[in-house]
Image (cartoon, rainbow, N blue to C red; front, side, top):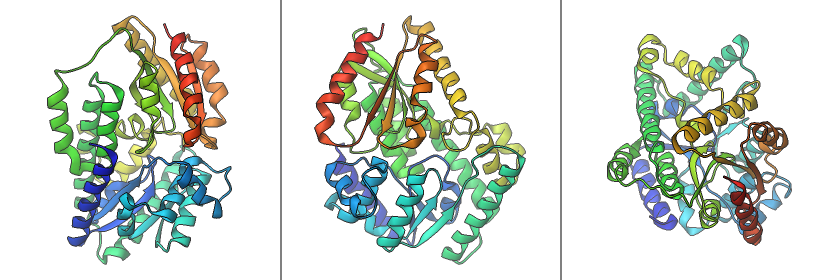
Length: 378
């Protein structure tokens, strides 16, 4: 399905949700918003996960300087320009302002203020200790109370538990999809679509897995890589550049990828913790790979990539390369890129720090860099 058809079908889906009385709460894509609380209240969580282009980035410069994260620029430009295929943005009732990063805060506050969308607030601690976990639970309760004012009724614990289990099953299904040995662009298309629709897409994912589990692809001529850093969003062509250069992404170590769907509960945890808010706190506590709120997350990230490479090498007798995808002016990843590359290359894993924005003019330069990097991989 091409992007225009996907967005058209999604617009129809959201319109039907609205006709059923459902509210829509949107947020800039990252991995810590408690979607389950929204779902339990009958509010649809719309994750903004759309790549940009020169026009969208330029449209944001009336609100933020060009030295802002290109993804945030694009999202502001999207609300300012509102291309025809994105008319579903008019269906948004609330926008969640969170503190994933400085650009997230600034972009979300600008969207709520200048495009007249009521805001909800959800702030996260930047550390992992007993006090920060207590603070996180207080934020969950406060977020719950904000939502209850919207729907004018209390969110029952049993409804929240039901939503937690529903999203847990959704993520487990995405993990099953992730295990398929398919060309990266094909797998990413389903992952992106699924994360746009949420658990409503479980049947679609199941059908895709059943159809493709016997048709897995393998070629000695393709250079397989891990993509880490910033996500590949809808309407971004970077995966095509990687594949045109002879590469293939076998693992998406990003928000739209493993960082999201690896956050699951086993049955023992689900059955042993009866308070749904304690379950959400437990998930936050276990989330060691988030680039937002974990001391030494980079060390955990390096160790995780080493482990993925070790397993792959044992099976395929060759190393994976790593493309560290950095959206320009994303402080989370750009500040750590040199350290990250040095740590992995000392382990014999080749790394490309690929910093870029969404400008079409960069396509040729990016292709050249990717091709040169892939030639270095054994």
